[in-house]
Image (cartoon, rainbow over all chains, first blue to last red; front, top):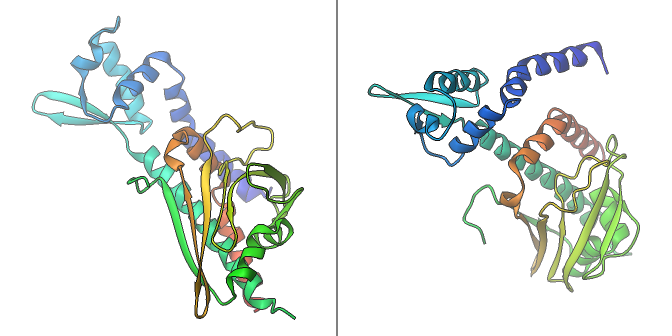
Length: 119
Length: 154
């Protein structure tokens, strides 16, 4: 690996470090699970049924938000939270990549069947 | 099929070769391996699996396995596989596979081939991300290599 690509690998790790830290906590994972149903949820509802205080939940949501995993949306006096759609976008990019692999493979098939004339 | 835009990939390509020729290139495992860049151990047989090593430069450490579903001569060839099975140390057999279908249609100019791969929505999102990260950067380079190869040998 070249020094340049190693450096960019380290940069990637540093950039993603807040995500790993954010996910390494059971409370935050539970919050993500609640938000993963797709709708915007208030702090009050996220606190409901939890042993933690509203302040503690707010702190955890802040960590998740700093890591780019959730987004806070203000509605009136209330703060709602929703999941960031980025992971879905990433799934879409993965599909695009597979789509490109097919393009490349089929281009090879095309030259394979068109160049080899039956003798 | 599924209404989801993330569930399937569809490709259509016109080939200036008769269906019989295209059928052989798809279903003879050695011919398939030449253009798909894989060395398969055994032939394609409906209901059976065949596996092999990827021969694509830089990806030779990867294995691939396909489970053949249907073979209707010169019409339809289909198999299932695990599209993100990129780590040779991992067991992907418990994950849902995707279905790959090759449909052939005879035309005056040769053959129209429609390829679909479907079932992506059943694959855990975390695995998609993982596959994406493992490959990010690599494929852009590989595609450039192929373009260079193809244009230098028309």
